[in-house]
Amino acid sequence: MTVTPLEHRIKARIRLDGPMSVFDFMGTCLGDPEHGYYMAREPFGAGGDFVTAPEVSQMFGEVIGAFLVETWERLGRPAPFQLVEFGPGRGTLMADLLRVARRAPAFVAAARLGLVETSPRLRARQAATLAGGPLSPTWYAAAEEIPAGPLIAVANEFFDALPIRQFERAGDAWRERMVGLDGEGRLVMGLGATALPGAGLPERLAAAEDGAIVEVSPVGVAIMAGLARRIAAEGGVLLAIDYGYSGPAFGDTFQAVRSHTPVEALERPGEADLTAHVDFTALGAAARGAGAAVHGPVEQGDFLLSLGLAERAGRLGADKDEATRADIVGQVERLVGPDEMGSLFKVMAVTRPGVALPGLAPTFPLSDTRSRP
Ligand code: SAH
Image 1 (tube, rainbow, N blue to C red):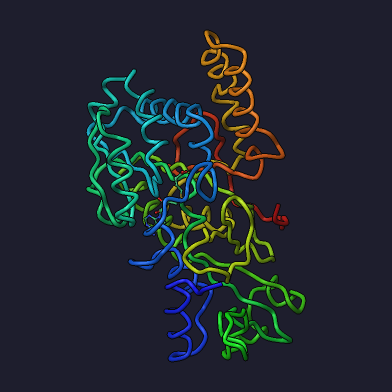
Image 2 (image 1 turned 30 degrees about the horizontal axis):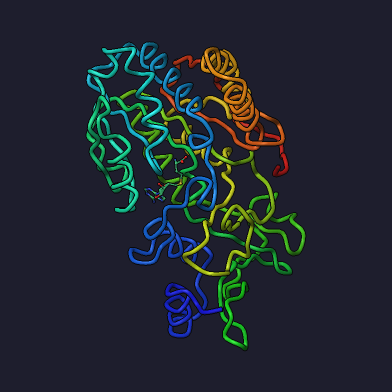
């Protein structure tokens, strides 16, 4: 098989500079301006590589829309406010949630729509999806560009697309996992030369077994801390939904998917979607550290059902034929079923302290250790 253009470039860089961290590899594969996965491809849907919740069913975005309008009410109906989505993909979630939000004209009148998206190709797709909707979006490359003021934000499968660093226990030390070349010039995973001595690290790291892997998401934590600081100061909410776990935990969650099938993470750089599970405990700690309150994480299934997904499905199916009704039931099952997205995906929100949210109880730091799903 031929090598991908990005593989060519990554190998040349490794020959020149030596092995690159998983962080650099993941960031390059997803975000390279020319050949990065999100830059060059449209990955979503049955014909793409994976299906996200908004692409499963319009009901997902409708429930999120109802949540955001209700939250806006509880926040005291701030006007104006920034209505922002992080990593909107095809724009489906925003289109669906705006359809529901339209029933609250004061919400739409107060909203300034912003989309945080790095891919020009996906920006164009989002523009097409949202054309003719009640609000015209402004695009931002990063959270810092969003104008000041109260923020009502949603991020579905955004944090899992941000690059992670991995460290592996090797003897008495920790070393960073790096992508290098083997004797035949193939990409291989290895360990970096610099050793972090085990002694002096936090207890749980010091006690880890040989071969144990820890993951950190420096970009995700930084984005969360920045948004939480802003929300603590100016008000609002951030709703984050992702495939994730409550850490601390050990394990390798760096994974690649192509055409709905798991593939080797180092195979065909730029052509597979790369993700890592989200450590909600780390994100929650970052938000609390910035002065915000954290709600959840709860399982996606519980969240959607407590906000009335089943009733919405009933209404949607009421005047439909048998086959369409069966489709709707299937979609509900995919969104909330425990063996489907229902329990693998978690929902967490960040507000100022003292705000009560629909479907999400405030939570306090976890002190227990739980394993990954
Ligand atoms: N939320 C969508 C798409 C999820 S895929 C859905 O649920 O269908 C991840 C999205 O995040 C893509 O739109 C991708 O281009 C965007 N993205 C990835 N890294 C980003 C970054 N660092 N800044 C902004 N957007 C990013």
